[in-house]
Image 1 (cartoon, one colour):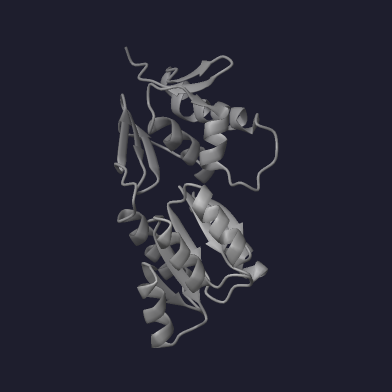
Image 2 (tube, one colour):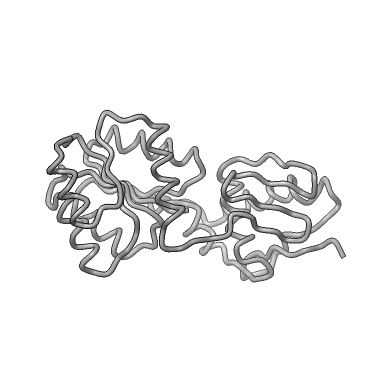
Length: 225
């Protein structure tokens, strides 16, 4: 799931990015209101974490312009402004939640999960392809009764394929969904994760559920038959 963090304190923004990446999210970061608004208008984010005191455009303006443009992406305001009128104004301009700094990271994650549950693109928590189960809510994977341990990025790649089971997904589509926009490395990084996934979900079970469609991409299928 792709999130946008709009925060001008670069150290805090990087801390949030690293923490959310560790939870399996894909994270883009903007350091001013104009850049944040442009990202939110053009990319398909599941939620936005938005500071209020931003250069160029403040968070109130960003939120108001998003809503005026018909963008319904959930917005969590994360700010040092702790006045009740600031909170009321943020909610009135379209924010969905409000959290003041300093904040508990545990609470921040819980607030993000709550926003995603009621977000604009509900997805089934459990994805099944044959006896392969991908639990998006718990970020767990199993083959029948056997749990499979995956890294956060491996899980994100598998979930991307499982959401479109039996359909070819290109490397570019996987990269766009799982990696953030700052990534400018080799497209073949996807192959590295596909190989790792095969070693985890296929090889130990004598199956070949991740198919390579040469020159196009990858497809997740039920190979038990």
